Length: 467
Image (cartoon, rainbow, N blue to C red; front, side):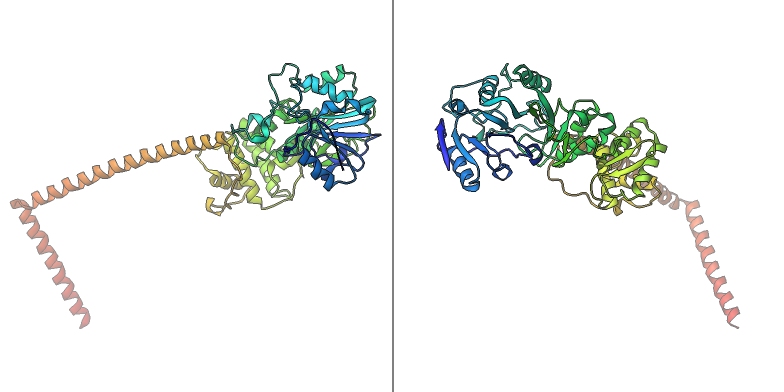
């Protein structure tokens, strides 16, 4: 059943509802309000859900008869009793209807906090308008659903992760957990709490989780994985995260320290591998031109059980060089070629002075481990589902240089061929000229006589042998 509270939008439907991770809602004390469009299957039973579109409310009521559905604008909740738990993991941008008065982010937050009972728990999500997902996205035409977009020029909207925490603290809330969310606010699969994202010993796990979450499904400006893993190494995991999720309340013992691949993680009970990713170490040795260490790492990788695991999904414990796989193993050469592609795209292939493509560099890397193969033996790369424009431009420049070198060689060969043909023609003309002179004719007669005598001698020898 749907209750209209005012400000509802009769013909509007919000696309891409947010997904609620079960680990964040394992315990929702008291009366619970879920504000904004959220995936129906992820909603706990018995909660109250607020949406602004009538079609969304009707579909939600039909799909989940065990929840209470309110349809309308956020400011209409002021007349209802306060809630012990308020969940707004979709953020504040889709809580007001088109008929509502324009409000800033801060004013919308005040409306949301007004329905939270004193001492209650707030779960709030916020998109980072300067996150890695926006920095790497190509320009696109706005869709019909984007008639309201996050206002990055709103001076009251928190400018960054620290400003968000300060705003909630200033409102009298106790920050129990704050997460950097990847790959998006509406569908997060990785949540990194402060404990895990600030521990240098867990940098490998964080890099691997971020790399797994940010595989781009469409064409991008630059590779978001390379940018995000670089942010992890430089302490910007939260600053460049696509979104943040904050849990405010005095009791958060039932919430995880992190969520990796949608699985909750509790520290320090969970035995996470400590160290850096194999790809990070290999690229570091390439920068230092440290071939012995490169050979040692490649051999340990390609001759062990992690041979088919991508290098960015393997954590290396130093100094023992124990390799821990964070993903299933596949074909060893496929994983090796993926690293070769990462080295070329990232500009690390200068360690090898030869101009090489992915297959050639893969063969060189295999040779460093003692495995001899030709570039033609390397399996073809999987067809990419997306392309990075920056990498395509770099590849174009590389191919342009190789084409210019090939053209220069072709021009040189053409020049040498023409020169040698001219020399051969000159020699033939000289021979013809010399053959027309008296000494030349005498020499020709002498050579002819010698040849005739040689043939006669051979005939006598054959007859003598026959007798």
